Image 1 (cartoon, rainbow, N blue to C red):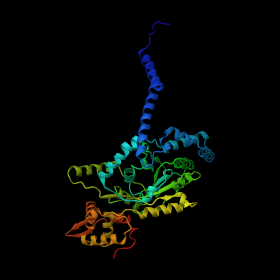
Image 2 (cartoon, rainbow, N blue to C red; image 1 turned 45 degrees about the vertical axis):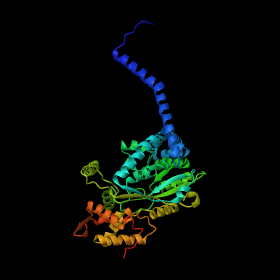
Image 3 (tube, helix red, strand yellow; image 1 turned 120 degrees about the horizontal axis):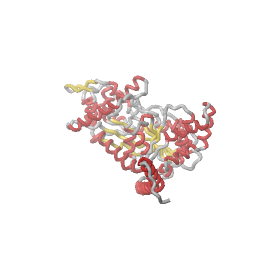
Length: 447
């Protein structure tokens, strides 16, 4: 029993490795997980003391547990059976498809990643690119019940929308975004999941996928998770808000049904002096094909150009970016109404608070015939007088300075040429794109 045994070196190394793995899996890993779990709980407890809306337990649940809960939901189980019958596949194959959908949708939220990396990064990036302004914050938002599920409903101008709203809402809550296929690229997808976002396939027609997505949104809504959605379903291609799509709104409203928890929709309106993807979006709108052909080389070239401008002292921020938080809409106060009525009311409230910024004002003036700085200033002053209820941002409270900012931005973009005091339009399409963002505030030309 105590006699020495000779072993080949490779076998001894293999046995040693098995012993190390066994020790780690049974003793070390559980202790490490417990340590980090306790640390995460302390972080969340500290965050909840300062947040207006604490992070919900549903959001803090382990991703594995949420996936299991989702795929064993009775409605998902029935959808699996129906899918197997309709497609002729075995039920275990259909169940594996449902599991894959759930793994794709369910986020892995990290409070540390969201507040220590995400919100700080959002603040830095927003302020590096723009002069950020809070154009309007409705007083009724302070009266929203702490027990209600809050859903931020936003117009979609740019992928910077996520960044701006995350930054400006960081003192209130952790938002759970619905993001499209563009974000399902490694390693971006891992980062977005830790930020609490969930992926959606906007063009999917699979009933099984739709059921898994619907059940996740309903579960999150019933649990009080603060969400953020873009009812237009995609980026604006022409600067205007698009008609709303009903999918996610339907799921949210169904998630509130049968519970005592109210759902409060918060209209959020965004506008920019410069949309980073403007020419890509305009090209997609002109072609009628919603495919954004932005190559990595183009993005890298753009970033390097901005870095060079900053190093050489010729960098200007991209003007102003403004966000307005409009009058909230309580689902309970609406009573039994169709989703279309709720969507229409939300879009009306979003349009009502879309900020009016220097570049859209100047673009509108130029398109309506102003051809020198004085004419543009007069036109801008007329717009301000015509729409006192609009949230117009005049930097330094000066029409003249707002016109200066707008003209400088458009000149740098080569949309306008200034020569001997005269203004010449060189890119009317770009001017039209920006003027369209405020067209609903000023439906008629200024005399």
